[in-house]
Length: 469
Image (cartoon, rainbow, N blue to C red):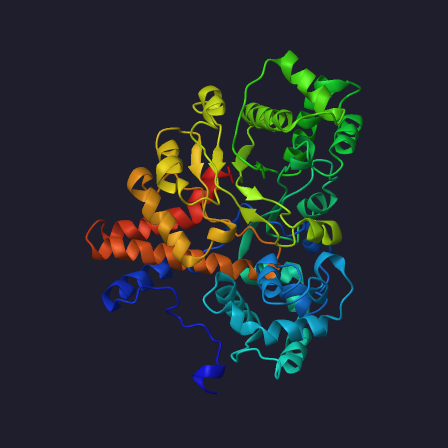
């Protein structure tokens, strides 16, 4: 097989090109490459693990659920229907053929790196996918997927996943999580994460209906704003009882706002009547971000903020296929002024953990590192989504480390719906950290003995500390 037809990743992938520095990176990678995966934020449904049924086919595992993959295929001419996005009934073999025919478009992308690792590591495929070999590769993968060793729980063990956090609606009964907790044969931890976006963003689909259901289920018979806050507190406790350690907030901006309770109640009534301005919407969402921080101080859940995305940017795609199809575009955000009300009251509260993520890398050194470098509550979320690529991750590390060192990092998050890509994404993160630390060793900025300790801290201890694991 020629190099042109091979897709097997090099053992030195993503490590420094300089031979001496690469040797340092190899040694550092060896310290962490076999550590268990701690995944404090992701989107794999717990039901997949609880039900433990085989994945249906290669497209269902590797293509359709991964919007990193489908968005670039769509940009290069595929239709969303042809990729099976949005539960559209499409022949999985045809999806796979289309994917293999377009394999070359992933050259140089983070997705291409992950996909090559998955094909090689999971299925032993060492040739480059093409339209000509698509059918054969499909049959090879499908045969492996039918094996008991490829059921989700077996793969959790194969992947070395110790902790997997999901992202869940506040009214979810969390039955899948609870069934996994009482299953003594299952050794990994699958934990829910409280994601209240649909109940605090006045522009969310059926916001009023969502709030009405929330109050009816968990408001203890109370009404209005009081019933609303009571219901949110009660559902948070339901999540804690099911093993949750964190909340997650996919807000448009990190704006926080402290309102007098009477003012907040009147604002709540306006947005609930669906009679609000854009300013009302922004004020309500900002106030509820503040209230979520207050609740985290009270109940101990870590609070992760994922701002900066113009979600469902393309109206037609959203109307036809729903959310989370890859049609989300990053926007510029500002943290320093936006978070001041929240941090003024809670930034030094004992036990409060606030993990800040961004899609705007101009904020790395200007705002996020200085905030994490002074507030004991603030941790730096890893580069995610469009920034979870090797070069962007290195830019992040270079931008923040001189201000915060390594102690204020919240650990890597894979942020994925594509279950099979989890180990590949974590492996990339480990190689990037090894590369960065190797350069610091080569430049005599830290010793190799200290670098060995740091990489374990960054990969394993950081997410446990920030997310209270």
